[in-house]
Structures are given as C-alpha cells and as structure tokens.
Length: 129
Image 1 (cartoon, helix red, strand yellow):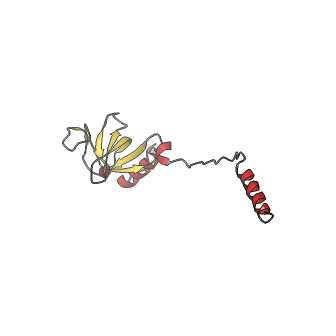
Image 2 (cartoon, rainbow, N blue to C red; image 1 turned 90 degrees about the horizontal axis):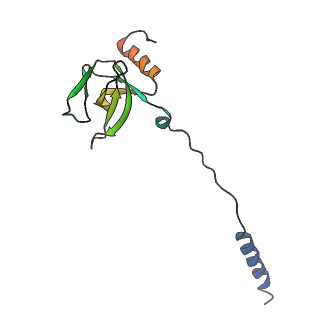
C-alpha cells in the first residue's frame, strides 16, 4: 500500500490542477479582405464596341455600347456557368446606366485612379482628372 501512495498523490494532484477554471481565451484577428473593404471595383473595356446587355444572358438585348478603353464601375458579379467566368453588372459613370457584360471583356482595377491610369496607357493619352 505504501508503494501506491506516491502514485495516488500524483494522480490527485494532476486531477486537481486539470479541473480548475481556465480563463484563457484565444483572440483571432483576420486581415481585411480587399474585396470586402472596397466599395466598388473599377474596370476598363478591353474590346471595341462592347455591348452592355440588359441581363446576364448572351441572348439579352443590348442596352449600351462601350468603346475600347471606356471606364466602368463594377457593381456586382454572378457566376456565368461551368466555364468559371463571371457576369459583371457594370455602371457607366458618364451616363449612370447599368448593364451586364462577361468578365473577359473588362480589365479589373481596385480604384478609379488605377482605372484612369490604365485607360491612359491603353489609349496613349494623358490622365484626365
């Protein structure tokens, strides 16, 4: 019995320590996701005479036509199907009109300043304020 006494005392000690209240809490801070922190994304048309459609459907009626290098604001996006592309709902700043186009027709930028710089590079003109 004397042989087991030290083992029993160790067991009681470990049980006592493991049963006490532990007030440790983990804090997890995630970095901001750029897509969630930007109000809108911006784009530049990369095709000449790009048709802006009424709905996200290739058979939809055209609503407006963009020229190569026109700047648009991207309002939302939806999956276009199995080919891993997206439909972008865009707004043309000059007219305020909205419509839809496939992602392959627009180069994406995080700010209007980046889009204007890209437009100037595409068109070979000075940046307009």
